[in-house]
Amino acid sequence: MLSQIEGSRAVAETVARCRPQVICAYPISPQTHIVEALSALVKSGRLAGCEFVNVESEFAAMSVAIGASAAGARAYTATASQGLLYMAEALYNASGLGLPIVMTVANRAIGAPINIWNDHSDAMSQRDSGWIQLYAEDNQAAADLHVLAFRLAEELSTPVMVCMDGFVLTHAVEAVDVPGQAAADRFLPPFQPRQVLDPDAPVTIGAMVGPEAFTEVRYLAHVNQLAALARMSELAREFTATFDRPLAPLVSPYRCADAETVVVALGSVLGTLKDTVDDLRAAGVPVGVLGLTAFRPFPVEAIRAAIGPARRVVVLERAFAAGVGGIVAADLAGALPDREMHTVVAGLGGRPVTRDSLREALAAAFSGKLAPLTFLDLDERLLRAAEEVPS
Image 1 (cartoon, rainbow, N blue to C red):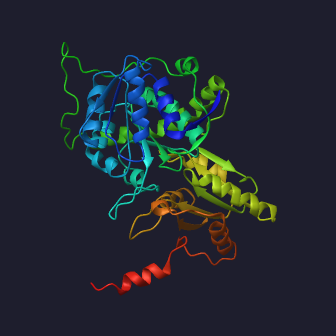
Image 2: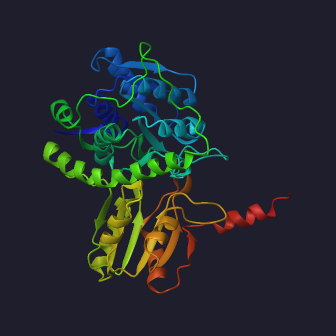
Image 3: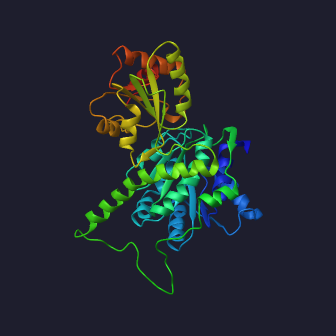
């Protein structure tokens, strides 16, 4: 049933329906409302059979999740920004050990300078950590992707992070159909771990692997990620049958079928992009939007199929690699080597991405005047002022 609910609360209620057994968290904006709501659900008894563990840092949160998962518990945590960076060592341990932990990342810029608003710098910095990364366009997708994430993580024995834009989604109140408990139970069976640490049958996990086998370990991790692409599509069909609504786990094309130009993006900016494309379509401009839900693993074949014959691709990036350029664009260039490719960096540190600015950038693309790398709404006055500051 649809209800007006804050995005963080919708995610918390959905995670609770997934019956986690251990939740460990350290508060950091803008994810705090999620774990606050979950702690209240545990304390009230509404989320029974779950231990909520207050920890002293984000590194400790992921370490507790690793221990809980290795001991056979369904484990969950959430973080953002510097908190995710503080977890970095443990993130690689979780994926290397094949532990099916689910984590919400409330995407937020990385400092310095400190900035609490939204962009994708945090999750993008961990793109090679071995975690599956799913990006939500809106709060309905954010809720639904968590149900998928637990199922996928436990089937493949690999960790999954669900990324939702900080404040833009986490603190927005909108209509969300929070999954019901009965349907969630049908879709997500009780956790049956592949490996369990048991004092009565002691084993070692995460032992040292030398040169004779380390390449094979990493290769198998790659194969496991690729296997997730096919399984996500299958699970999306099962999700639709169970919850009676669609879920796009890989890509979500919008007006791409006859597009000559396709704009590719992740997260909540897709809503503004779709409105902009509708305006341009009304003026007869053949342009479409492709939303990426899965960024890791990278859904190459689904992207190729969705973009079709479009000759120009404009990638709207909410993060970038200093000294290089686009992060998503680099992966797209490998998947689409024969297309005209442009990177537009936008919305860093929470700067609004407006329809007027998008129309201006796309008009430059249509006329052949858009540079390979563009920073949307770059403030030249601020740049000149920075140049004038004595070193």
